[in-house]
Image (cartoon, rainbow, N blue to C red; front, side):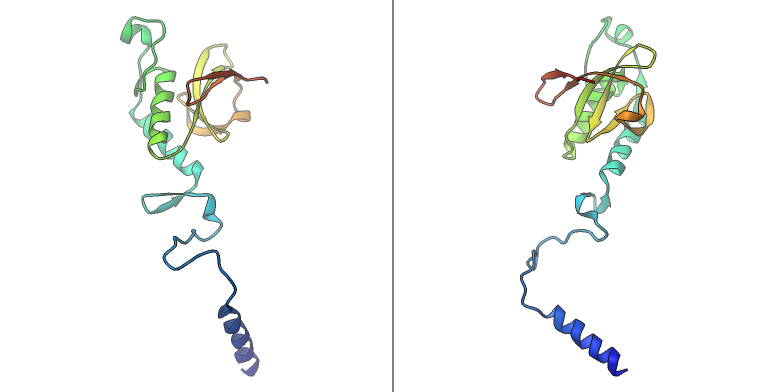
Length: 159
């Protein structure tokens, strides 16, 4: 019992040190368990991956594929909409992510079947109208052609 009291006393003394701390009273406290890199959304501590998957789930639940030819009588027309083709889907997801503070890039790819396709990239995660789940870039058998930055500039990807 004396040993336990002695250890408690040592621990308590260590807690009362005047050493500077990185926080002041009233500062937000980072989440426990190494969550400092996680984003706080609606009172929940969600990882970036969880947040991206939630947005992708929302988009897939609401999306209805319509070709540009049947909707606009054009070969290609880009608009942020959940009624459209792959680039419309990607633009809608990009806008949705921007509203919650997550930057993203459009990526023009060639699919494994040789078709043109547009996906969204966030820190190596790919959000794709063809896949209901997030993928890492290396998990998809796409040829990565060019990347469109939020500034509107497109850059060729050197594979």
